[in-house]
Amino acid sequence: MTPPTPHTPVTADERSVLADLTGLLTRLLQDEYGLDDIEIDLQTTFNRDLELESIDLVTLAGLLQERYGDRVNFAEFLAGMEFDEIIELTVGRLVEYVVTSLKAAEAS
Amino acid sequence: MAMVDTGSVRLHVQRIGPRQGRPATATVVLVHGLLTDSLASYYFTVAPAFAAAGLDVVMYDLRGHGRSGRPAAGYTLDDNIDDLEALLDRLGVTGPVHLVGNSYGGTIAFGYAARHPERAASVSLVESEPATAAWAVKLGGILDRVMTQLAHHESDAIAWITANRGHNTARLAKGAARLARETSLGRDIPASRVLTDERMAAVRCPVLGLYGADSDLAELAPWLRAVLPDCRTVVIPGHEHSVLVEASGTVGGHILSLVEKAGRVAAEATG
Image (tube, rainbow over all chains, first blue to last red; front, side, top):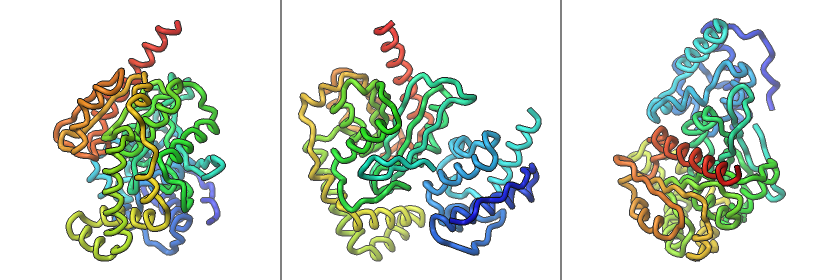
C-alpha cells in the first residue's frame, strides 16, 4: 500500500485538481496493478491509456469521495454519460468537472 | 472500499443512500451478471437515481468478480444465493428487499426470492430468467464455448475479438478467460439445482421482466407472465442484451415505478 495522499487544502483550480487526481490515480494503479511511474496529464484517457476497468472507476469514486466529500459526485457525473463518452473519458474532462463542482459548492 | 466476510468469501460491497441522511424508504439489492460484469454496471447507471429517489441501495461483486474474493470452487447458483443471504445477514438487512438482477444476476435474485418468498418485496429481472432445466443447458453451452475457445485458445480468441469487437471488449474477454481458468465456475453453473414450476410460483411478490427487443431472451416474456402469479414484462425496442447499460434511464424508471408501487401496496396492507 502506498501512503495516503497528504491532506493539502482543496483548491478549485485546474492545476491543483490535476495534482490531486494524479495522486489518486497513482495510488490506485499502485494498489491494484503494482504499477509505478505512469505519466498522467490532461489528455490521458482512463480506458485506453491507463487501462482502467469500470470496477477501477468505482474505486476512484471512493478516493474522490475521501478527498472532496459530497462536493463531487463521480457516480452521478458518469451516470449522465453515454457508454462511448465513458470509454473516451480523459483526465482533463474529470478535472473540469471537479473544478466546476468545487466552485458550485463554494458559491452555495 | 467495504469488504464483507460471509464466512466463505470476502465480498466487495457498495452501499449508497438518500442525500443529507434522509431515512431510506426501502432497500434495493442489485445483482450483476457473469464473467465480464461487476457492480460497476449499476454504480454508474441506475444506482445514483435510486438513491436520489430515497432508496437504500446495496450493490456487491459476486464471488470471483470485480473486487470480491475468488475462491477456486463454489460457483453453483445455490452458492451464489448463499452468498447473497449471508451478505444481507451481515449487513443487518432483515426486512423484505426489492431485488434487481441483470442477466445471471437476475437468476440469483429470483432464486433468493424462491428460497425466501417472505423476504422479497419485488423482483426485477433485466435480460434474465429463473433457473430452469432449459436455462442450465443454455448456460452450459455458453460456458463450454468460453472454456474451450477463450480459456484454452486464448491468444487466437483475443486476436479475433480485438479485430472484430475492439480493444475494450478484448480486455473484458481476457478477464473472463482468467476467471474461467482459475475457478470451477464453468462446470458449476450448468450443474446447478434448478427450480420446479411450483417453486417458481411460490414467488408471489410483483415480478418485472425487462428485455431488449433484439435479444433472444425477449421471447421468454409470455412464458414468464404465465408461470408467475404477479408478473409484468416490458420489451424495450432497439436494444439487445446490454439494455441495462445502454438504456439505463428507461430500465431504471420501470424498476423505480415497480418498487414504489409495491411499497404503496405493502403500506396499505399493513396500515
